[in-house]
Figure (cartoon, rainbow, N blue to C red):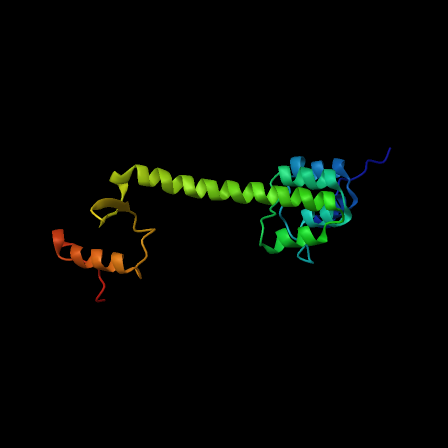
Length: 165
């Protein structure tokens, strides 16, 4: 009995996605540990091929495994416009909204936590008589309030802004 050799090339992974061969797609992702966001010589991803060929099950699988498809990106827009069916476009749109809002929520949550733990703040502004903790990473050096605060701090406790350098 002749044993069939398992394919190990990127082209084979992309062809499996384009033809909707889920057994082979799973093999590449789960056993061969292929990078799910890899690009071929035409700068196309496996997700693009699955969208373009209309294989909803393959698209869902790739998204669940971490295929990137963010709104406003080359890959995200290419998949959206190349999708063969409205069902795939709707799935991509729903997925985009979920991932982008989750990313915004993580970002907002991080800043909220930092503000709640104000002793960790680098700077403290007084605005309308109220103390406002701020972080150097977030304060804009071009901000007038930031410039005034730095000028007030200069010379205190030996701290200098280095603004004259």
